[in-house]
Length: 505
Image (cartoon, rainbow, N blue to C red; front, side):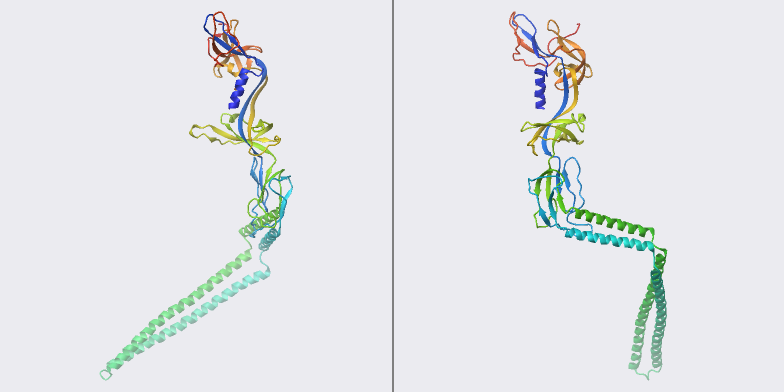
């Protein structure tokens, strides 16, 4: 902004070919006179530019990693990666032992140059496993599509027969269990009845039967009843177990029949779809394994310089970037004010000047970020942009400061005056001030075109060679004397001072 202001003042004073003069209004006595600074309307070029400062950086920085494509870390385009260098989709952990290393930091490299190679044993094993899984998935689909063979059909039918036989055996065993348990129950019930009968007989024969015998008879009844209760519990458990065996056999028959019906009917659409999905996944794993194997060499993707080397020959490469390469291409990153953003477009030419050396180059706008930054607490909102440098000056390096100037509008070979000569506004119309024969300014309406901070295009109203007022300056004069060519201490004034008349007034 400071450079723009200085340039504007220089254009006003010197004028891009315009003639600047100082005219003193005559007066008498020791009075103050009004001096007018003027400029001559001339045919020239009027250019409007956006200026900014920024920093030089590489167009691209690439990370090279065994098992995957080079990854773009920064720049105007997006990078890609084909997978991890430490694992494969086959489930095998990949290791990349560095076989050769031909790169050192600071080394200049060319696109396609091999910088390092790795042992491929681990990647080859991963590919073999992936291919085996693919073959297995393909065989499964083929089997499902063909359906059951005669042997498989007979085997399925045999399973139904066997299950039916098992059910019949379970039912027969349950019947025998029921019969045996019923017999045991009746026998024990009879034992209880016999014990009670004996006690009743002995009690009727009392007092000939001793009391000890009656007590023994009662104990016999109690023991028989306890045995009956225990037997009833055992019978309930035995019967339940027999029923469970029958239910299990019944379920097995049902399962065998369903399996037989399913196999006879052939594979469902869901089964075929599942098989096909498994093949697609297996094929992707094979492709990924082949791709990974193809990146056993680290190759520079661009002409550039090696920034970092993170591997050692003879040692397994760790995860992350093995080698980092910076492209030879440079670009300038800068930020423009929000007022300048609407006038910027991709592909616009830009003049770039390196701050330290003063060397210049031509670039193009390659990126305009549509999201502004700043603006908090009343600050100015700025928008980041990138300007490419196809042919950077000799000695250009990352981190250098640079200024850019982007031409956003231009009117060539047109009549123009310094912008400070304009009076009025775009809404009310513009005028310039001419000096009449008595050196008095008068307003002349003009039609303007392109207006910049320094020059204004005049489409009509005046012609080339017309002298217009650009400012005023007051100075002291002595009686009957005119002091010309000196500004005194007034400097350049803002248009609008003094007395002005409309032309013809």
